[in-house]
Image 1 (spheres, rainbow, N blue to C red):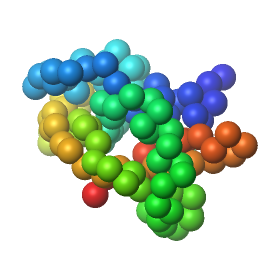
Image 2 (cartoon, protein in one colour; image 1 turned 30 degrees about the horizontal axis):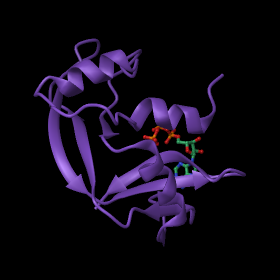
Image 3 (cartoon, protein in one colour; image 1 turned 120 degrees about the vertical axis):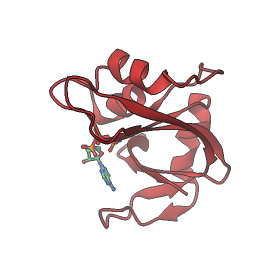
Image 4 (cartoon, rainbow, N blue to C red; image 1 turned 120 degrees about the horizontal axis):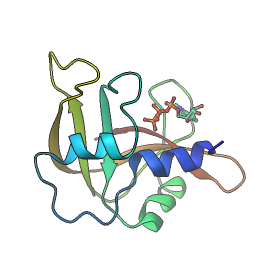
Amino acid sequence: KESQAEKFLQQHMDPDTSTVTSSYCNEMMKHRNRTVGFCKPVITFIHQPLPDVQVICFQGNVRCKNGQSNCHQSSSKMRITDCRLKKGSKYPKCDYKTQQLQKSIIVACECVQYETVHFDGSV
Ligand code: ATP
């Protein structure tokens, strides 16, 4: 079974995409297998090299949405794409709105190697 850190990479990392088209989210949600069983309402993909994201665990500590204290905010803005399920979209036809953004991101980090395990938001 994949670890939480592996799941984070699988779910949120997309460093190599330079051109994001309007069908990006629909394609990504299918490819990354996140539309099995139900349509995930929101997900963010990060278009930055992996080391840029890993170091966030050593940047500004902030409180997570769930009240835990293991979240960190990136000191620089990152190229991200927000995928949001369109209203009225019903499984298995998961239809997403694709929005490219340049924002600071907040991730939760855990454990020995201090790895990213959860995407908490962008600000
Ligand atoms: P993501 O949260 O990255 O969008 P997801 O929604 O599929 O992915 P969750 O179910 O939220 O995944 O799981 C994220 C994992 O991160 C869980 O194993 C959770 O225990 C872990 N985690 C560690 N710290 C936090 C935190 N502060 N807030 C939320 N999840 C956290």
